[in-house]
Image (cartoon, rainbow, N blue to C red):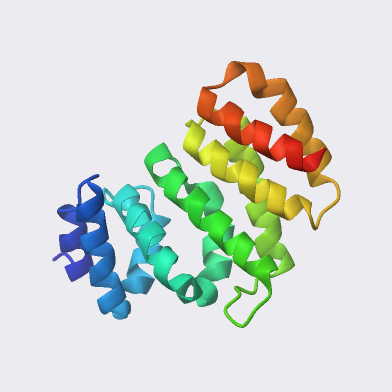
Length: 183
């Protein structure tokens, strides 16, 4: 027997309005949030990518809901196998890292281990053969992290300069933007 969330996810499509509708369901029924996060990191679940889409939209509104799930979220970034799951999770990772360093009353508090997991996943997405959106979010995440870990910017600079000619206009735009900030 499917859970109510699984039934909802079965009907989610890639259309933005459809994804927003399911995200609104989660925002109005937070008791399903734990299950949503769990599905995001269960690649064998047929709704895995859909759960990731929904988590991205929910995170725009309630990023703090991820606070109790950070250890699970960050340590499982490496289990993602499909690009349709990586892109939204790369965006959520960027939101988490930015929030951590914002340091206000609504900031996410990440452990050193959480941050290391984000660094590792972001570099993996950047150097592996994944679509440009996940790479772009990873570049921006690594830029923010590089403001706090002095070894990241030089590594990021090497990768961006080396790979620059092999990528799309979108990748090049993000790479130029970040390289300009680093230099």
